Amino acid sequence: MVHRSFAQTSGACDLHRAEVIAAQQVLPEALTCINEALPKLSAEESWSLGEGFRVRGDIFAMSGDLTSARADYDQAYALGWDAEPGNAVLLFETGDLDGALAALDRALQGTSWFHLQRRGNLLVNAACIAARGGRSDQTSIYLKEIDAQLERWRQPATQALIAETKAALCRPGDPNGNRLLLLARQLWTSAGVDYHAARVRLQIASALLRSGDVSGAKVEITAAERSARHLGSRRLEEEAATLRNGFSRECQSIVDGSGQELNL
Image (tube, rainbow, N blue to C red; front, top):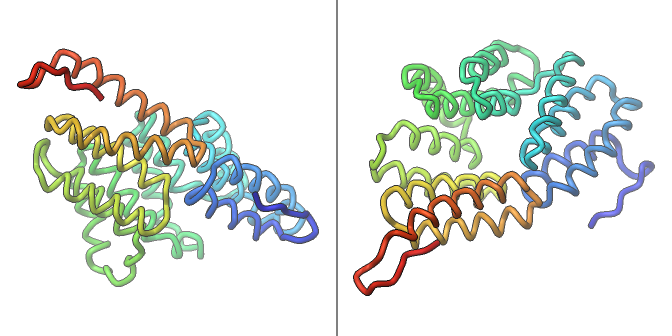
């Protein structure tokens, strides 16, 4: 655990550190860090306080506290900041596809340094949400801009979301979908973003189970559970448990050639 002092670090430093820790290390530590940053930002750089609430909203969302995430995203907007793409992801995950895409489209119209700097991240999240929501025509619009400027979007995290988007466009049972998800997992892992690597592992596990590859799914679920415990993400732990338990019940009725039940 890193020891911090109010006098030793600025609010901006704590803010950046919290975002990095949330993606790569431990969510409770990231939450502590951002909670230390917020009062400093208020005193030192009040213009960036909205960014602090955006980052804390993302941490809450990854942890599984969606109510607190929503409150922080709303607070970021109230301060004149932009809470994307986390706000849009939360809207989509709670059933509001149209609201999610509208929020990202508004952000993509922005011309501030924040919007221009994060345009690639906004585009790939919009593409991924549209693809997962079955909006292939809308997905193509986002991907067209991305493909036209590929040199700008070489970051592993951006490439991972592109792979997830293309996987979502594949028809059920298409082996290319699994290959793209495996690529996304590898890219998230190479970027050191443990939360998203584990999230994709659960997508892969679900696809493997649908195809009958129980042993492969078990490997992915177990790895995702290990990452979830390390990160302190109750959300990922619950999703992994739901996936494991749901298919365990289904697999209890399946018997292989030697008379042994197949269990997760």
